[in-house]
Figure: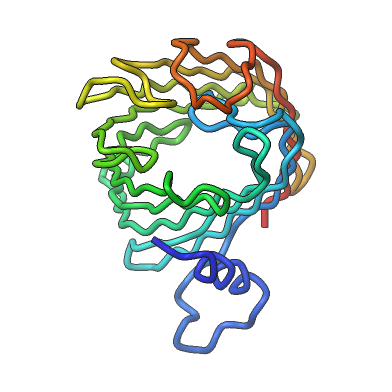
Length: 233
């Protein structure tokens, strides 16, 4: 949804004072250092540590927008993944919330793989579920659906169990680099330890190895450990 300049403008909003007319919005976000970049279970690069930034702007009427940036490599090409998104959320009588929105993802070193998605989902006290639809996943003429479930459980005031499971399904069929012929599963199970605004997370990652990767993707094991440090503001 946003170009590089748009994503940077969103990041700047976190440090600039708001005019009185914008006082009814809430700005939040996080900065993080992850042991490697992963997207839906796959790592397209060398497996090095990457910094990440997220900025969210929530309006009292239910609308929201935001931006995400992460350093990443595709093969040996260094660059950044930039994502902008906007949507609408509404709380239901049960206490859960529904939401719907769209996002635009761009890669500074591989614009041919830029793509858009729209999504809808439900959020609960201890988890959420979403389904995404893309008419041109990773820039290819192939339609995909990605469904995910995320959850956490506070085992102790000092740590939480966190879990995620997702499946990427190719609606169009056929062979496309990096896209499964049918479906691909990814999962994560870990522990999050909060320290004030800081959180350390250690997780075990899994992705189904279907052999569908770009020619320049390095081969990573289907199971691996990940480590992340996040500061929320």
